[in-house]
Length: 377
Ligand code: FES
Ligand SMILES: [Fe+2]
Image (cartoon, rainbow, N blue to C red; front, side):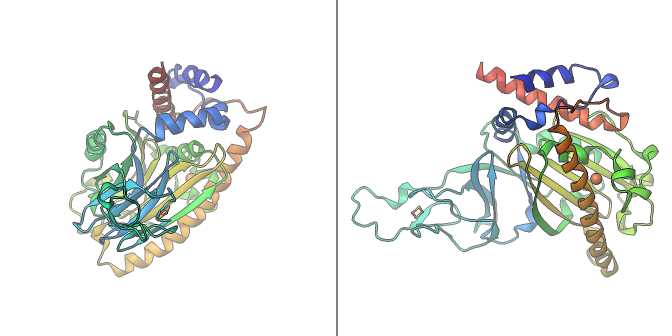
């Protein structure tokens, strides 16, 4: 297929000569089908923060690589993922997010316990072969790491913590696990999921795309873009104390020197994008809904150090308003990129040194697609 070969040729260039990924990688339905089977059905997908599901029965649903799944906190306090498809005539069960004491199918009310076993089913006593104990919702892999909840359809997926231990080294002292989510929203934008992911991976666009909000605070010369690692890439920017809650709290003695005002922009493959400042975090978790549509989970909150600081909580509310405005700007830019990518004039230009993470992402994507090709033989 063209897009696969074009991507392979694209990443064969060294970074110093690299260009943006070819348009077909973003616009081809066949390539998207490979991304679903070779990326989203293989790797770990983040559904959000564990702290958003504190009590038994709290759940979140998702359609992962075409599979309806749920993540639910069981009565024993642990989080588990399982199929969200009824074992009777196969309706989906739960919708969206919420909390429930049991899982009741909206079609004929077969009712499951939180652990996926069937509790009861009305008017089934006359079917001689029906045995309630033979029914249990299939399990899906689910792991927590530093407060994040990941699911994978791939039974052989390596442990999240092993894949991401280098992230832990980088952000040691931020104590990301203790950050508490205070908002979570879902959005759908008219762009390819990778356009939005790549937009996050570079801060090159900040001064211009975000001229109306944070652009003036962004200094290109203070952006550091090291080479990525196999499971993620990152870059850092520095904030000054015009935004106090982005600084390490005075009680935070873990972070020293410039780290106290360093923001990490972590892109955990395929699609968890975290902005981590010493005081707050926000994130996007992306899933394609078609070549030109992306479903976005958007959440964030504050570091534990600021939990008792009322002023800071007020400032965070103001920050959320700012982030919403920043998102409107990003939406404009990324939807325009997708429109451009669909043009017959679309032709990838060279990458800036500030787009190093984008190059690493292209390599990751190519590796996954090539592995899928090899498996199919
Ligand atoms: S499809 Fe779920 S109870 Fe019938
Ligand atoms: Fe942006």
